[in-house]
Length: 474
Image (cartoon, rainbow, N blue to C red; front, side, top):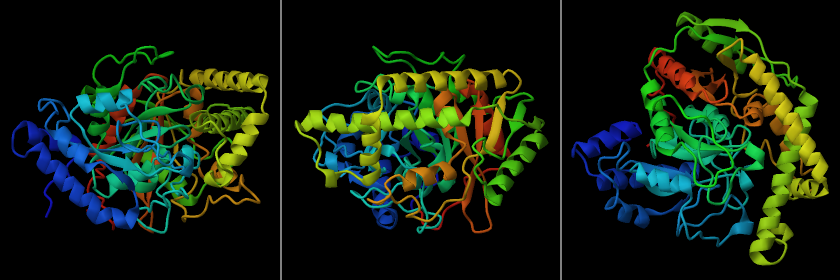
């Protein structure tokens, strides 16, 4: 048996530093796990095993995460010499010649990158079912979605292929799959991690880079390794008072927690998701925190319109980049119906409408920031439903926006944190009667990941989740 599959990244790196196992042994074991489990899940779509084996000889053995096998999400983060598909047939054959800044920092931390994980086309829908690469299956039930857009990363981590994997979040894309797959997922504050050299920001700040992990401490260690501005960044988050890893196990104090189980959009919420959130609230109260029902006042019409504007503009931008790279518009059949529909919508928008959308989101940010004058944490469900069947968000030529509108019903709680830039996390505290994981969503004020790490570690200690293994796992 593989003695390392259930160890988190910090534990694996500790073995390497103490010379109890070599980094190459960890890498080879992880490769075997991927090859054994991935045929059932389709979480890993690009293998870079030879590059990983070569990288072992260059890693700093005294680094916090020395020798730990790791996977990159096939979106935003580039690795030199490794294909970059972004979930789209239109990008077939694209091979970057450089590492993104996040990848450079991952290497400096000692991580060994084995390959890339599956994503929906350009990361748009909250599931991972690209036509170009096929669907990723949920390791708890392969007929259901692993979430998206970081569904490949979440499935790989849940199935014990690797202890952690890169992810990013533009509307819930770290937290949604973390909830669906029963792992830990934190979206950092806007500007906490760099997006260079290709981007200063994405969608005017909606997108944050980080990772999906099984343990809280791994998430903290990874953020310590990557956080901080890059040369030329347009803005950055306020620096933390101390390393995030030091917050894990620190006393969070008596937090003021606001609980809301109904979204301001009016979307219906499944009883299991309400139960999970209330159960998390009861656990917080038992740990000594003050919990009461409350929610910020949000203008849903304005925020929904603004969010759609930014997504449509981003789709138009993606198509424009493809045209710039090739010198001609991408062939229609190489883009999915949803991408085409959003791009057409984006091209129809005026510059003025984009500016108004930003103003609406900034107005929302001020309203939510004011709410946090009275509370330390806002607790909601992550999703309005347990993991839904694959195919739920399918778009058709006749109705290309059908899946996107269905997504609004599925994940009404997560996008607000992308709009405001606040840190938020999905914590795996509950499994329903069908054995499906349902995460709880905790939001903190802008720049305050420290509170989330303290609370998450306290919850992890009170109700450990590491023993929960999905039916499909290495």
